[in-house]
Amino acid sequence: MDEERYVSIGDGNVYLAKVNPLDQFDATLKDMIKHDEDLAYDQVTQIKFEGAENYTIFYEEESAATYCADDVYFTEKDGEILPLDTVRVDNWLESLTTLNPTVTGAFSMALPAV
Image 1 (tube, rainbow, N blue to C red):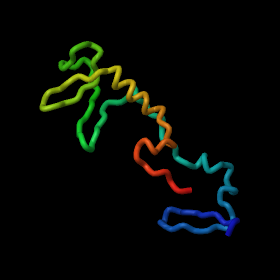
Image 2: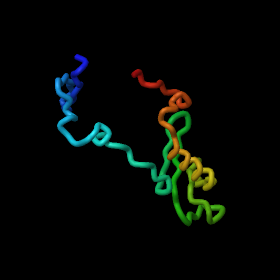
Image 3: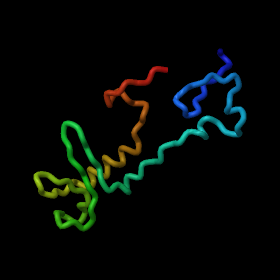
């Protein structure tokens, strides 16, 4: 059994194969995994939070609800559109691009068993 490989063909079952099917291709497993695209935080138009508090942040240039020309992020509270600190929202969005998915303890997630 040490030489067999687990194979799934998408039918909901897993099979043991005596020959590694990857040997038939000029590719590695990494080449066959669909990787997530990098976050493009500068293209965000809306952020929605749901949980203990529910609210939405949206991007809008030249809004009438702005206090200054730099305000581009807003939220709605009690029917009123309020501007948010653009620098703080941009910094938060940029920090998402550098998250390390191996640090799961800070997010109350269990590490997968290996």
